[in-house]
Image (tube, rainbow, N blue to C red; front, side, top):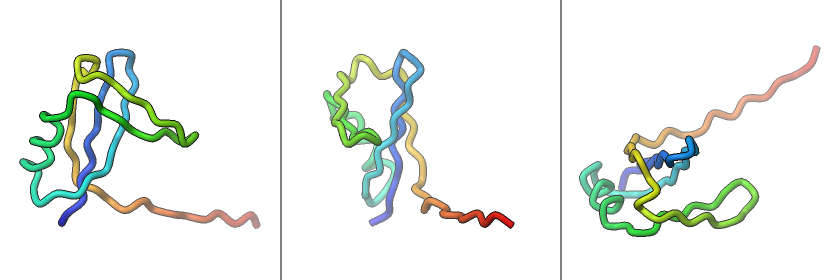
Length: 74
């Protein structure tokens, strides 16, 4: 299965992302449409829940591996 990112934009300007695995973008769209409560874990390890009515925009993007770079002082 391929990885996709569902990006939720909330009214207050907050955008949250969740990575899911699915066979196609259509499957991801069905998942997003069927959810009434959207949940995600923030960087502090806390779960945040949003009612679907609070979400203004949903984008589905292909997942890309994060790029890790290191800096060396010289």
